[in-house]
Length: 258
Image (tube, rainbow, N blue to C red; front, side, top):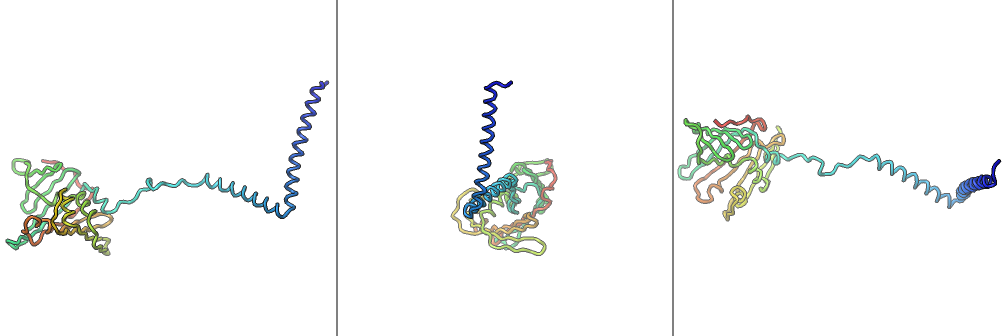
């Protein structure tokens, strides 16, 4: 038999359940009564739409694909930037000049290759072979290799140096050919040229013209009109031009000095 205390507890629980049911019932009745009123009905509809849209927005936000930052997106290099980083290639150069005194055209042709800090080339006019290792030029003779003080303008205008000059120059003209070749002509003041090439200042007036030939986003030839540069200390030449052609880019064989 239940005690008085247990009976009181059960009665209190029953009353609490009835009160909760009554509250729910009252809330439902309140909604039904509000729905009957046009004004309150509009408010209820807006409220329900707000809840619905909020739930949809939350779902979309959770499933949205992460946006890749601009730093993570790889931007393709331009032909000039690819040229700047080029350190494996074969090359041929043609230097030609005309002196006022003789009025005859002279020339020098080099054929060679480069792999990073080493180069090998042949002077086709003298049939002499040379090696370059970290900027030091070695001449090959019957006794082996010996350092030489001979100067070759052709090998000082490497792609990274040419890039610096072209990047500072003004693009004057662009010509597109049907085979995909693009010819670009640049000019740079003699002052800027000397500042970049020699890292020195000069007040000399003049202009250097450079022309690039590119195909498949790769510069394959650079030509220079260096007349003003070569005549800046003494007017000796009526013409001074250099053309360097690049081939087998990225495929040059390893160089062994011997």
